[in-house]
Image 1 (cartoon, rainbow, N blue to C red):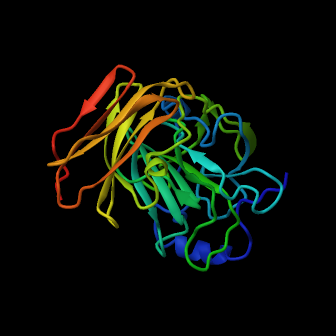
Image 2: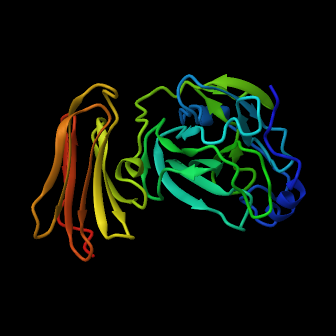
Length: 304
């Protein structure tokens, strides 16, 4: 397999700008201390859908400071462009942004897994989640891309990191997938990220321009999301299932704008209920949903 982690053109520029910002792709040589036992406890899986095989490489890019991994598959430079990237473990999105001229990460998603653990997914073509959003293991968070800082050309790949704590770069940990430490520096692995992974996202369900502003867990059966489109003043609610995926089960999503009639989508759905949309600029909304035996009903909130 031809490894295509980082193209030669533009690499020198990438290194010069990254080194100025510790905590990104650059900085001083690492003083690495890694506890494999501790990493295994986080139960990470590959950041790709179940059954896919990817080649990981930790040595092809001189921008790497420690145990970072660049992932590719396919035999051509653009073979991976647009491929789905999923959460390696459940957690909360704390960064979902294009890094602009700050560093070489381009479109970056960072997920906080608790206990000081976090995963980084860089160079994404598309980000499918928003900061503050809760995500489940295996949930789609974006697609493979080649975004970086202006003028820095890289070929499409996923740059993946596991971090513990905040002292960069010594906080970068060895990646563990399915309880086994990655075979540094190069290994091809098949994803076992086969849990309750809904292939859809609330942003996909509600459409372009909608961002998650609130969510509520429905036990282990799913999550109901409230989204808002600042361009047209509409709210949207979608209930995303986490269990019985692909099997129609009773699922509900509703949205009620104060002073108006409640709008409900309820039925036997395979993946989600919704979208339920309504104009709600300068008004309070009540929202909620049901999956399995769990129900969530909000008060009137998010006014204005």
